[in-house]
Each structure stands twice: as structure tokens, then as C-alpha cells.
Picture 1 (tube, rainbow, N blue to C red):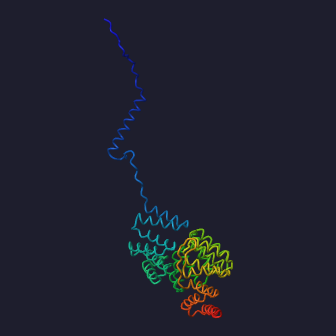
Picture 2 (picture 1 turned 90 degrees about the vertical axis):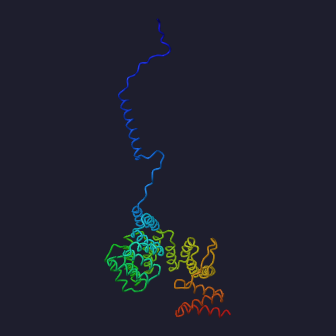
Picture 3 (picture 1 turned 45 degrees about the vertical axis):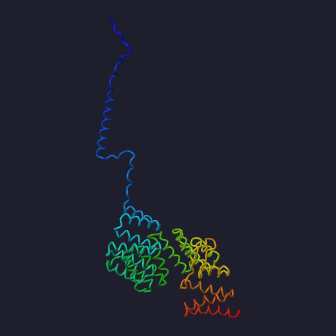
Length: 395
């Protein structure tokens, strides 16, 4: 009997290599580990987004402090706001926010922040101190005084409470007490920028300009990136007649706060005092481009043009400052300024220009406001008398 093999063949089976056995064992172990971890939910399923870590309030505080040290007050304020959003129950966050809001020239917002800090901790001396600072910058001196006194009652060694109280006393003309409080603040904390700034303000108010410069420079050494300190230094150097140094400090302030028109106005005023009217008007025109609605800029430009004998332009800009107008390019509405200590020069200069152009009815209307505002000022009354004489002669 004969058997056929057919169409199938027999291959010799290869022996398994030891390396493959080890590899398969490892893969099996990994698979078992993954399955076990999935069962206990310690490994996220694939394609599921990883949760984003939430920043802590303290991280925002560190960011805010870094911004403040570099002079970026607006950015620092935003970081403090984020810190209060992350944790709204820490009074110190609201206190620092309020302090910077004052330095950013937003005292109303600072008052709200300080009030929030007090609502969290009514016995917090620093909260009451910063509240007094905000109220002082708002011109609410009586209420500011009460807050400063309350801060001192809560903590008699609070240097900033004494410093801000000294600032209130200086602003209200109580110089003897202001000096005592300012010196006490420095004694309690000789490394406080605020204490040196306030003492400089006191010295400036009593005409001790050289000493004021020293205090402002010390404050600027502690924090060189606060534009306000450079502006105060510039103003004191200008009073002393050192116009070049004054302009240098104003330019430093402008570099720190390029969106702030204050340094431009100070530089313009300096050139105005030195009789460089062309350069003075250039800085005012730059400021006007930044704030075309600001009537004060129109008034200042009118004074410069009056001094440079450009009476036609002076009339136009002084009219905008006092009676209001629309900006010729942007169509921005300019609201006229009420008569007061800071606008009186605009008013009597405008009346004089109108009288010179023999627009006597308009001039008389302005002069009546001037006489009513300053009835006992001999200089003002003599200007009014001269303008009326010009109109009388013309008739």
C-alpha cells in the first residue's frame, strides 16, 4: 500500500528565543498595570483635556509687587485686582490696591477698595490710613482727618498713618502739626517712600525747597520708578530757577508714564516761564492730541499765544477753555471751565483780548464774573479797569 503526502508540507518549528519571552512578559505586565490603574481612575482616558491649574492669589501679589518695583503702576493695579478676585477676604490685598489707585490718580476707586478692606477688618489700622489718603486726594479733608486719627488710635506706631495725617495737615495749612507728624512717620520707618514723599511735600509747602529736594530724592532712591516723585523734583528745581534740571526730571516722569499729560504740561510751563513760547506751545499741542477734550490745555495754549502776540489764536483757545467748543479735527466736545483759582488767569486774559479786539460786550460779560470772584484783588481790579477804559475810549 502506497501513501501519498498530498499538498501540505511540514515545517520545522523554530525554538523561541529567551529575549522574546522577556519582552512579551514585560508587555503583559504593562498591560495589566494600565488596566488596574484605569479601574482605580488614576490614569485619565485618552483625548480628555488635562485640567488647567488655577493661579493662587499670592502669585498675583508677587506679580503686582514686581510691576510696582518697575514703575508699572497700572499693571500692578490689575494684578492686585486679580488677587482680590482669587481671594476677596484678605484686607491687605485691598489696602495695597487702594494705595496704588491713589498714586494712579484714581482716589474714588481707592476709597472703594479701602472701604472693602475695612468691611473685612474694621480694626485694621492700615485700611483706615489708606482710606484717609484717598479722601485727602479727593479734597474731603474733614473725613480724611477722621480716618487718619482712627488709624493712629488703632496703631500708634503705624508710620503710614502718621505720614498720611501729615499730608492732610499740610494740605489744610496746619504746618506746625504737619511737620511733627511727618517727622514722626520718618522716625517710625526711615525706609518708607511714602514718609519721605510726604515730608518733602511739607517742606515744599513751607518754602524749604532745597530740603524738599533731598526728601524727594531719598524717596526716589527707595523707588526710582514713581513718576510723581520726579514731577515734584522738577517743580522744586523750577522754583529755584534751575530750569534745565527741572525739565530733565519732567522728562523722566514722562518716560515712566508716557500716557500722562502732566509732565508735558510741566515742561510747557517751564518754557513759558523762560519765554520760549514756541517750545512751550509744542508740548501743549502734544498734550491736546492726547486729551482733545481737556479745556485746561486750551487755556494754557491761549496764554502762550497771548504772550507770543498771536492774539487771534489766543482768542480761539481761551474761548474754548472758558465757554466751551468742539475740537476742529476730532469734533470732541470741550466743556468750558468755571472761574476759580486755577482758571482766573484764563478769564482775565480772555477779557483783555476781547477788549483789544473791541468786542466790548463779550469782554464785559467775562469781567463781571472776574469782579464777582475776586472783588478785593487789586491787581485783578486794575486789569478790569484798563479793559473797560479801552472800551470806553473806543466808544
